[in-house]
Image (tube, rainbow, N blue to C red; front, top):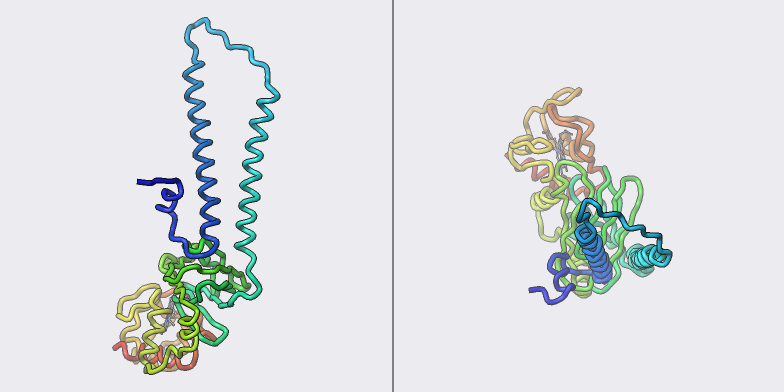
Length: 314
Ligand code: HEC
């Protein structure tokens, strides 16, 4: 049972994870409630009057009704007040969403088909997962490597387009520790629906600890390669022989490769390196030139790891 309008609304709104969530929800509830009441008044009135004033006999005459200035004024002025009220209310909420505090903690976000990368000022980088402190304003400065994406965190009630060739930003202050889902909200091709990420909101001390960690400590190059592959490549490649958007990568190393408009060759380390950093240089026969170049995005260690990993897929 729903005991109140707000319990009812909560049942279909996503969880609230940021300081603006309740403000956005209140505005939504008002708009929903106002629309519902207007709908009942207008449709209900229409049905009632159609019935009440229907023609009852063949000799019925339409009554002569002159206009009523006061009535006309009221039905214009009351909606005007409601609309202006929602405009001002919406403006206040939106202004809050768009104005980041000066001391916000900044993280760079890069979207590409089909994953999200995050870069911290400390040099720490992640893919598909972003960690932020609770109770502190965080500002994401975002851009895209290929097409327009949109960074959307329903629980934080915020969303922003991510555009190639320029920076856009969004900010939030998470008010609970937990894990929240990120979606891409701008259709960006085949695996758009899988362009997901998780936001982990941590207590400040845990976050500081996380930021200092070396994510690759104790991992072999092969392990690093496998991790990066799972984060950045599986949207388009299988680690088997089965093709996806790009070729299945099992058994590619050491095999003869054929290209669109380039001489064939046997895949060695140099070929793998070039295929990752500058895929357009040699486009595998039967596939589109559809891989976003990874030039400048992978450290030498990560690149080595990926090459090791692809070599291991025999
Ligand atoms: C947006 C989709 C996409 C992503 C993401 C992607 N690739 Fe590709 N990849 C392709 C396509 C399409 C081709 C085939 C066309 C070409 O050769 O450029 C390809 C080709 C390749 C080849 C050559 C394969 C062969 O059969 O000779 C390698 C190696 C490769 N990718 C590695 C990677 C690695 C490693 C990653 C992750 C760091 C990655 N790709 C991410 C789409 C993608």
